[in-house]
Amino acid sequence: MSKNRCAIATHELTRRFGRKLALDRVSAHVPVGSIYGLMGPNGAGKTTFVRCLLNLINPTSGSATVLGHDVVRDSVAVRRRVGHVAALQPLWEWMTVREFASFMAGCYPRWNPETVSGILSRVGVEPHQRIQTLSRGQRTLASLAVAIGHEPELLLLDEALTGLDPISRREVLRNVIDVMHAEGRTVLITGQDIADMERICDHVGFLIRGQLFWESTLEELKARVKRLRVEHPDGAPAVPPGALRVERAARETQFTVSNFSPALVDSLSAPGLRVEVMDLGLEDIFVDLAQPQLNASGSAQVRA
Amino acid sequence: MRVLVRQHGGPGAAQWYSAMFTPIDPKSAVPIYLQIIEQIRRQVAAGVLAPGDQLPSVRELAQQLLINPNTAARVYRDLEREGLLETRRGQGTYVAARASALAESERKRLVAARLEEAAAEARAFGISHEAVLQLFRDILARRRPARKEER
Image 1 (cartoon, rainbow over the protein chains, first blue to last red):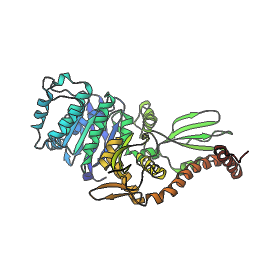
Image 2: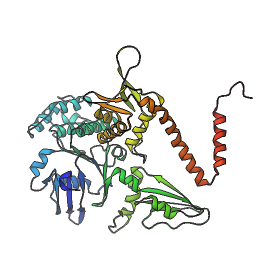
Image 3: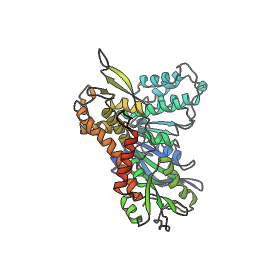
Image 4: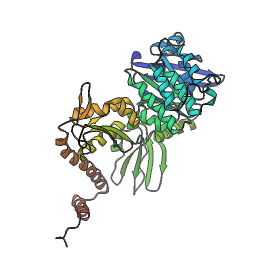
């Protein structure tokens, strides 16, 4: 993918905290116009990745560009064009919502007050309320409102859906869709809210132990990762190399593959065998791909 | 799951009604855009959506179904190419006039898709064509409402 078609492009981005490698040579590509879901277990490095993009922390090595700007050299230009919402991010508790919004408005050359007031009124926040009186969902929505007030080209939602009630979650999703309406806008969402991500993301990346071990469109991921069920009344078939979560019963074997193709089914077919291809949802895909990575001590790449 | 559709119902001007869509299943391997296409086709086949009905804009559809706007755009693009929908510039997206002509073949296609699945299952179990046809005849006979001239 060429660099200027990427809203985010990182090259071997690495960040070390003492002995721990929080990001390990991550080369990620987030296309312009996509909603990209960055998933991974707790502690996988998702937040470190986002913080590097905003130059809130420096990479140990490697590089990253956001909207064509180098994140270290042009961090001001990046911040101006990017909106950022993080779960439980500290806010000025003593400010009223109105003060918070006008304070943030002052940071940007462009500001859309209607966007901000629209969101706040839909989630029942009054402008005169102090931040400290807001519920968790309202706080997230207040952060989101001011994060998109300057009409950013790239919106970074770091665990912003985590722990929200259904109504606040829907309001967040509604606004993501709204942001995407303008041509060439991009959204990066990190988190574990797989059902929501499956619904609105078109690209996915899996980060495990600081390594990006899968990146593709959601469609390609679902087409390539399948669970196969082989019924074999008279003897077990050979399981292809690289098969994941292999489960054997007396006359039936199941396993997950990450390189599915019709040819693979043909190669397994034999007289007396019946092969069934089962589609997997994102959650099952995630577990099947991530589990061996978490168990393994090495850094094997799943991707064929 | 509700999608607003503008229809000519009874007398007077067209109104926006909220049409029922079965919830989208993001877990399905059937991509979301195909799930929605299938639902629109089904509603046209059933006559619930009729020529001249107006569908929401891409942005509204995305918001009503909480899906990626690119997905919503793709639904309309594909259905326009098929001739089921038409977009009038500056006005919106409508069920095309020729949609009712497509409805009949659409109904057959939907049934054929189900039969296709059954046929694959029969092949896998090695059931003969004749036995499958007999099963299907039995099913049809059982489902047919009892009439007086029948025993």
